[in-house]
Image 1 (cartoon, helix red, strand yellow):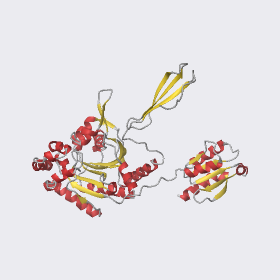
Image 2 (cartoon, rainbow, N blue to C red):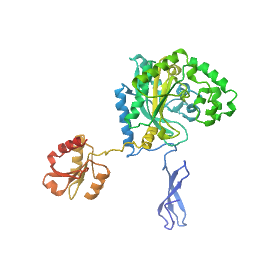
Image 3 (cartoon, rainbow, N blue to C red):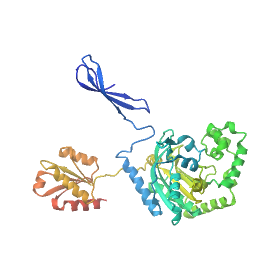
Image 4 (cartoon, helix red, strand yellow):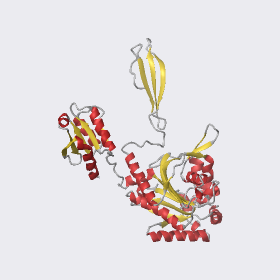
Length: 471
C-alpha cells in the first residue's frame, strides 16, 4: 500500500494507492477516503487503475513506431511494383470460417484461437491468420467476376493464444499477399520471389528459402495411408502432440521439432515420392521458374506447413540469426480453400510474414534502421517574443509541407535548443527580440551548427529549399 503513511488529520480527504505486482496480474487500485476522528478511513470511491498491458501484447511507442512505418512503406512500395492492391478485413470473423478454412485439427484452431460468443449468441473469433479472411472477402464480394488474377496484400494484427517468447506475441502483426484465379507455376515463383526481394529491401541477407510440394488431396490420401502404416508401431514413442496427430493429421509429424520424433520419422517415406503426375509436373515447373529467376532455394521434403488448406507448393523462409525459432515467413498454394468455405472452385496462393519476427531478425543482424528525425524545423523564441508569433510561423511551415514544432512549456532558449536536438530537428529557427526588430530570424543548421539570418518574409521559402536540399 502506498500514498498514506499516517492518518492523523481528521476530515482530510486522503488517497491510498494499492498495487498487485503478481506477473501477468498487475493492477492498481486507488481508494479515496475521509479520515475520521478515530483515525480510521471511510472509503468514498474505489477506482481500478490498470498499469500493464495484457500478457502477450505490447505498446509500440514513438521511437519504435518509425521503424514499423519504414517496414510498412517498403511493403506498399514493393507491392505496387508487383501489381498488388491493399485489402483490409475485420479483425474478427465467424468462428466457422477458421474451423473449415484453417482446419479443426490444426494447432491454431485446437489450441490458440481467441473465440467468444457475442450478445446475439454468435460464435466469433479474432483472426489468427489472414488468408481465410481474404478468401472469404474474395467470395463474398464476387471478385471472381473481375479480371483474374486478383492480387492483394494486407498488413494488420492477428491473435493467437500461445506462450509469449522473443518475437512471438498473442497479438502480433503480419504482412501477407494473396493471389486468386490461376494455378500457373510461374505465379508460385513470383510470389516466392516477392518475399525474397522484400527481405533484401530491408537489408536482411542471411536467410534461406525452403520449398516442398505437399501434393493434392488425391495423392496426399495415398501418402497418408503409407505414412501411417510406417509409423503405426512407433506411435508410443512420439511426443504427445504427434501421437495425437497420427490419426488426425499425420503429415504434421514430419514437421515436428522434437528430436525424438525426428529420429523416429527419419526413414519414413516422403511426400515427394508419392506425388501424382500433375503435382510432380507442377513442382518441377516451379523449380524451373525459380532457376530462371536465378533465385537460390533448398528443397526440404519434410516441410509441411501447419495449416490444412495448403496444396502443392509450400515454402518457408528461415534465418539463422533467430536461432532455433528461425522462421520469418512462409506460405504456399491453397487451391481448395475457396470451395471449402463455400466459395467458387478457384485456386490461390500467398504468404505471410511476421513483422515482429522480421524486426527481431534485423536487430540481431545489426541492420535495423535507425529512426530518422521527424522534425524539419523547430521554432524557438527568446525574450518577449509572443508565443502566437511562433505558432503562426509553425503553421505556415506546416502549410508548406514541413514538419514543424514550437515550445509549449515556456522553456529557456537553451532548453528549447536542447529539446530541438533531442527531437532530431534538421533546422532551428530562433525568434528573438533583436531579430524581430530587424524583421529577421536566425536559422541554424542542426547538423553542422552554421547559422544564417533570414528575412521573415522569405523564411518559409528559404527553409523549404534548405529541407529539400538536405534530403
